[in-house]
Image 1 (tube, rainbow, N blue to C red):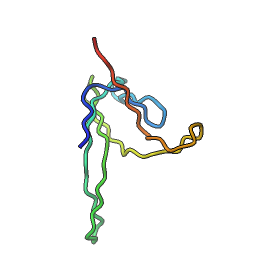
Image 2 (image 1 turned 45 degrees about the horizontal axis):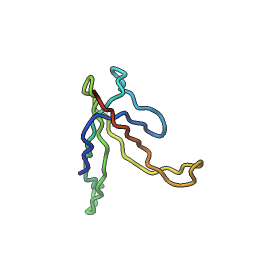
Image 3 (image 1 turned 90 degrees about the vertical axis):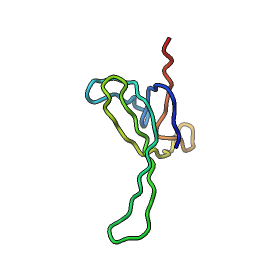
Length: 88
């Protein structure tokens, strides 16, 4: 499990993430693993989600991180960007 310690401002697909309830823009991070097994199937697939918890109200959002093609850079880049917030 990857744990990013600290508080982050997060961009998803180039847009800043804000809480739907309080409009806060600072989140704590953790990774969540889920096993997916189709009905009647025997093979399981493990999914990894990025869980982001609003530091103001505690609302939780989960995203599956993917790579997207950036035409400007001409390469694949992560769909989620994290910027650590340093509090003084």
